Structures are given as structure tokens and as C-alpha cells.
Length: 133
Image (cartoon, rainbow, N blue to C red; front, side, top):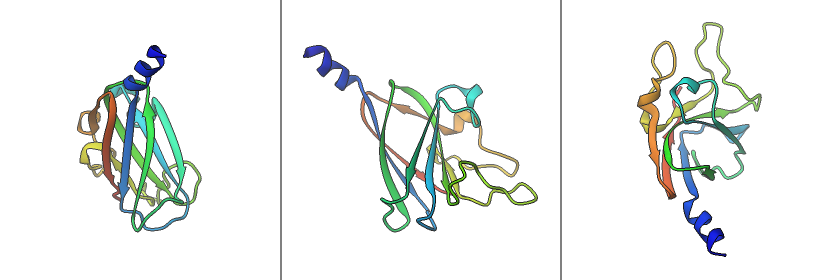
């Protein structure tokens, strides 16, 4: 019983609030990175939620990470539910996205990994990400 209680205490729980949605269509996609060489295309973990808990222009979800440490997060408001960031004919995003730590995408791609990293501690963590286009 003590081992079970210790494993629960060691768990890393994340409460993520994403703001800036324009519609309730589609899904919220989350990519989690724990090494720079993964970022931004090969996530360590990924999650997907229907937007049925959308309130106004924001949505809050909870998930667990396998351990404490430094992570980078990216979200996608996948309005058409195809599982990818849709772009126009010149390569500009047509769906909204966001990164942890308030990092902003540049003219020619995503921010650098260090700009997106945040420390997740054992126990309960709060994370906010604002969508951008």
C-alpha cells in the first residue's frame, strides 16, 4: 500500500488551459517534447481531445507525464480533425497553434526549443498556452 501511495505522489499531473479558440469544431492536439532534437516534429508524447469542454474561447484539460523534468509543449486547434497543421499555398498556417512559455513562431517556422521549455515538477502543475496564427 505504501508503494502505491508513493507512486501516486511521484506522478506529474498537468492542468493545461488553452485560450484563443474560434470555433468548437475539430480537436485540440497536444505534442510534448523532452529533448531538443524531437522539436517540433517528433513528440515524445501526444494527446488529443474533442473540444466538447470548450467554454467561450478557452478549454482546460488534464493529463499526466511520466516524470518531472523540462518539457516543451505545442498545441494545435485542428478545426477539420485531420491531425495536422493545414497551410495555405505559400505555406502559412491556416489553423491556430501555440507553444509553451509564451513562445511565438517566427516568420519562417516555430520558435527554438529553449524558448518553449518549462519545468514540470512532481505533483500538480498549471500550464497556459495562447493560440496564435
